[in-house]
Length: 464
Ligand code: NAD
Ligand code: UGA
Image (tube, rainbow, N blue to C red):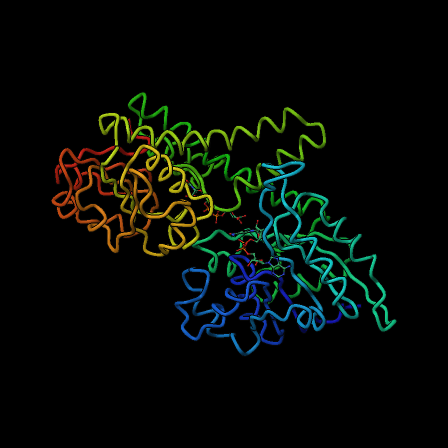
């Protein structure tokens, strides 16, 4: 018997995953009413803003997708209970950051938001509800979710309610979220209830080819998400470790990456050396994996994965050190321009951005930072740096364009690979800098010859 079709979806969490994912589902499934709810009223107001440039998440193409469905079958609301009550399917897409205190602090995921959502679903749901874990979670979290839901299978009015739990981790990357959601390498669904599983598969099959919809058990699905992020981050740490060796030996990491990437067993993607990986998930998910391994007594496995994060911390720190060394071992009172503050191009997200660590280290040395990023706000930079624009000897300010950021600077650091920086007018930049002037290109993205011809000294990550 085919399961009843899903007519109404509620997604708890209107963040970088909940918002874009639900917008794409609503776009492809006009017969399903999709309501994205959040406790953060400001965020919901921004999703509802008439001006689509004010959406709380910047993603290329997102505005057009939202414009097609918003008000038709895509809704953003703070009425959480009402949205749960009318939903056949509820996605849990809330934050799962690393715990900052208590048992497992610094490694384990903080599951308080997932638990709060689950309790609210248990309370407010009516009839049969499929609960989908969209957040990235430690393996076996579905057991907890199921236990909380099972404890409340009787409604206040005496009618029975029931639940099925699925795991459906999200693999989108920021900056390419819409393309990733439109054409995913795979959609992964883990679960025991075949009807629930097919109901969710049926939604994705509106636009995803059936061979790309993978079905597994719950635990494989939960663990695959952590594993995918660990493997991806491991590649970045691997290439960054080789970049340092290239710099020491005269090899060029771009050539090495190209040479190894042509081996089809290795593949060419995710081999770009940079200032270290950032983003809200790689570090958090690996640390969670490390915590789980220790919990299960797999100490050697935990230590193996921990190294991926250690190497990343080292890479971020060595960039700031190297800048100080090249600037005659002091940056006190010197202006340094930072181009890019987001953790990667095409997003306004700065969570765990390497720019934050590098900026903090330079401020600690007494530098005056001039920061340009096309999408990150001054308020966000202030939150990330944790200091007002002037703080003792050091200071920072935000510039409105890259050349202005370099005014009077001794050095310019490219920290995010925004397209804007590939075609900078290095003559114009050089003319406003103090000599000797340096370019530190941590993304190997600038036109090095043009910068050299304009009189800059150039350091590029991974170039010997
Ligand atoms: P986010 O912080 O941008 O959004 C989470 C939202 O959930 C916030 O707006 C918060 O207010 C809301 N929220 C928290 N508790 C709530 C509650 N009880 N009811 C309603 N709303 C509530 O986080 P995100 O980046 O969207 O990530 C969400 C999850 O998806 C995380 O587990 C993350 O690891 C995973 N993930 C993220 C990405 C990414 O690119 N950001 C990609 C894949 C997976
Ligand atoms: C990553 C994964 O790619 C997604 O599949 C996953 O869904 C997501 O994490 C998540 O779980 O949150 P995201 O962090 O948005 O996506 O972006 P990535 O493109 O993976 O980049 C992560 C970091 O690695 C960035 O700082 C980026 O600059 C860096 N990176 C990436 C490199 O330094 N070199 C590379 O070759 C690739």
